[in-house]
Amino acid sequence: MKDAYQLIFENTLDVDLKNLTDLFDRIQFFQGMPQKFATQLNSDGTIYPLINKKQINELRIKNNLPVLSPEEIDRILPIEDIESI
Image (cartoon, rainbow, N blue to C red; front, top):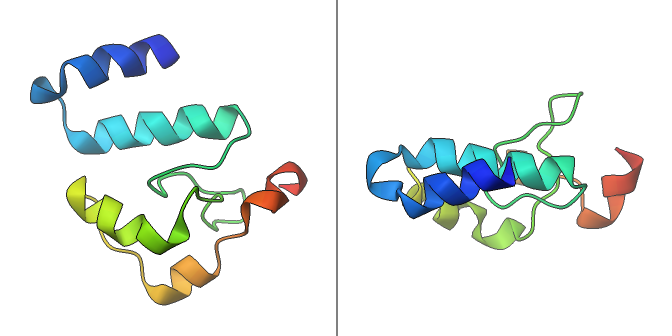
């Protein structure tokens, strides 16, 4: 997956940014690390923990993703809870 991400990242002119953000977050998810763009969900439908909740909507706008509501952001568990998910 990491190799695919690197290949896509190097050829971003041909790629929809949403696909790149999904793959980046998926890699983080499988490694048990916080995601960057809030594209991955927990089994209960909540958003998997983020690297930086304060900048999430700014990152999402830059990458053609919809903005999250303040309520959605508030429900995101802290990074420290990753191991219990």
